[in-house]
Image 1 (cartoon, one colour):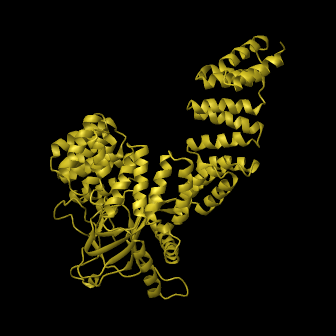
Image 2 (cartoon, one colour):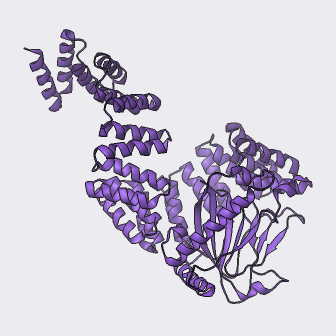
Image 3 (tube, helix red, strand yellow):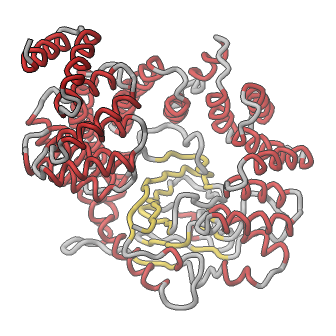
Length: 599
């Protein structure tokens, strides 16, 4: 039997699923021609499928040594290395394949996917673009390009390439999924829902599609359908704590009597999952259910004795209950388990502040900032410790005159300011679909909009976003003058909005004192105000800065008040403590807030 005939027979056996017989024939051929790259490659692919990765790699490297300029061999070796988690080696082999055949769609796609996993997103985008250049209808690379552009907030570009991916392959699930994500970020929720429903129909067991569908239904105000989507996601993976949390948040805001029902159901059926217990404890903490919160954490600790995040949060709860010695033991354990965590350090610092151990608290906050200099919670805690100790550095950090800036947001050309603000207020009020305050936010006595407000394409919100962006740029530029500080050291070539929302406070409503952990520059814009803000003696409805939520004694008090005015924008560092004073009367208080971060 000739070698060619044996090779064809081996290929036929492999195609019919008889891989062991095919492998035997390939080995027979290698006895005759040990360096045949085709035989080595074919046998390597069989061994790879059988899980014999070491032998498969050896065979592929022998094939490459025999035929070093064949790009498919380098691509196959890279696939093997990628599957083994050896991403740097895989990248090198993919690059060799691309160098040998620059128009290889497969190698460029694989290179792009590997670069994504390595966190080198601009290079990944370029690799996928090269694949699309060779084949403009290659849906996988079009889809990955769209997903990367979404991550860069280049939403219009993302939607364009994702629509091309859908047109190229209407059955490609990821194209519909990411198209739905882009539409949601653009505020086009009905279109997003349609795309995500299509994706869910194509892949009913993909949980991330169900979650995205729930989010779009939520943001479109279709509450019952959103809750149903979250329930279907929970059915797919009952241990996904983040989905249980989304269900609880939405159910709470809509006034449902049992927002924690999915958490409770898991516990009643005997599921002891530390992630679920920890998440439920976090959500219930705001409601002051300290007995239940502590019990949930004790159960979580018993289920996962070495979990530092559970141990640290239990320390926070014990400090809230004034059991400082027990709290200290838990923080010591958490920090010993993960000494590189800035989060555990600053949470320990807050517990020490509550125990009036100000010097040790300061040391914990300073240690956290050595780990992460831009940690907003550590900066906020350090402010309180410096003030409590009478440290002169406090005035350098907490310069409420320099770092708090007030701007007037005028109307777009051709419209009166009052007319613009009235239209904006109407748009914002229509966006408030909830009935109750958020489950885990600082708002009391009101509602908050769902999703990202600035993604809405309505005329007034679009005009407001554009005007605010100009003021933020001015604020950033103004911070460049003077000595370096916790704000200016984070400056980059630009900024982006990290989140935006509207708050509607009813009479007696307010915001508890807080900071914005994920921000850099934070804000308050006043779209509509109650008459009560005109009372200069009581400061009703006014913005206040400098007072924490810890009640640290007479010195823990507001250091600056700002009287709100319609059309006013207040910008300040995200680590500044701030809140609002409750107000009386019968009017409501309508604001827009956002966080900006370095680009």
